Length: 416
Image (cartoon, rainbow, N blue to C red):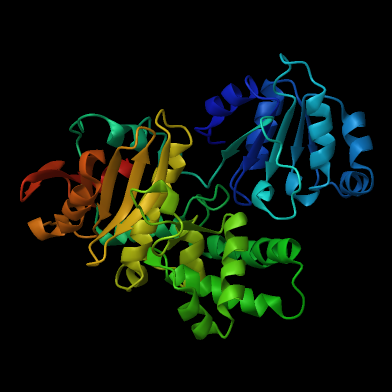
């Protein structure tokens, strides 16, 4: 069993909060982690996948919570949102020194859902568990967020990564169940995941009726092909025959399910974030995206037009995964100005400083590759910390563009 990097952070939260909620995609390892924590923290473990427990929780949520007592793990909590008021009532009556009473897990972020009436303000800490990072798979000790946030990037021995090797990593993804499976069994797992989990969970959250599977199948495959690209709801609607309001609603549901992630554009005025500009779309797992695109061979993927977007998707998601156990709290954006100068990823730190990250698939670079980072530095002014180009070469290099110095960082930093 692979030890998850957020384990220590999760214990910290349980020592300081009454309730902790672990959210994340199905099959990302939440149940396994919850069982480990339950054993280590002497908590009782229950799952709402148990039909009898589910029925009791649905009919008498207050009675169930009272009967289970304190210091409990409730797995698959998203099945019964009616338990929230019951848990809140128990939490309201706890003494100030009682912590780590409830550990909840869920494969959809129900506390962002309109169905949820109580959000447990002040009672609960929220942490997300994603599919495995390569750092976890390869047992590495580096944290990418903390490395990039350092005052100066320290040199390391990189390695040139060819497109075929990188494509293989993208295809495998990070779900714990698939990392050691052969290609045939991996394909069978993804097929089962999509039909048995993704579509059924979507139906549960939307209460959609009729031939919804065909509709959501078309949409998710289209979104997989858009990984790393801007979202234009009207264009998507025209391509698949939906109205744009339905498209936006369905994407919001897929985001609650941790299938896709929207990344807003970076603007200096925080009040205008989420209002100005277009968001980008990314998949939480490139393996799932590749499967939905039929990209099951490295040679097919790295010669396709999907490769660049999926590589950017991979880098963003690795940064997001590392952020869950980093010392530095961050927010992720992208940058695009009126002249269409772009930066793939913008990391904003708690002090407001930003790090621009461009992702390039090639092993060689030229000065013009840094134009987007340069424009971001001008736009952000004294908030600009540094600019980084992730590329497939082997050397960490300082690169000058006009009066600014940026860094070329080997993608092997993420891999080994």
